[in-house]
Image (cartoon, rainbow, N blue to C red; front, side, top):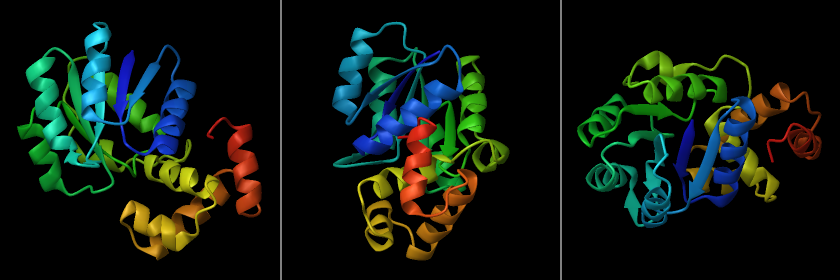
Length: 198
């Protein structure tokens, strides 16, 4: 399965792509920071199966990206990914031509299952696919937090960057510490690198 992940946060994009490719055998993940770059890459890769587009993208949004890809490459399945898991956004994604909508609370393993379903021609908008956190590894949102921790960012800055509450950041950090069996933030980054998450 060949995926193109469009996300404008470079550390998250690389980390998330690495986690996907490490977790699923036979998966190739390309990355692009913008819709324009993504369209160029898709033009050069006729074997692309799925484009995974983040909802929040700099000067545009993922919904516009879904439409652009639909116009240029209608045979490539399109999936919107977002930290905002409002069912109304899932409906808007479907209306914009998406084959799926995945929340960033979804575990990497569950994301892979959902993406395989999309690759097989199914649609994935169900609550279960967006909410599964089965303990098999960090969620997509936790990968974002981890990437910012690796930059040395404090909780307050991470909260601003991701548009979430500071207490939510603390919960994600606690979950990461437990998931990676780390004693503190420094040890967490060591463990994350050991496991190929950074």
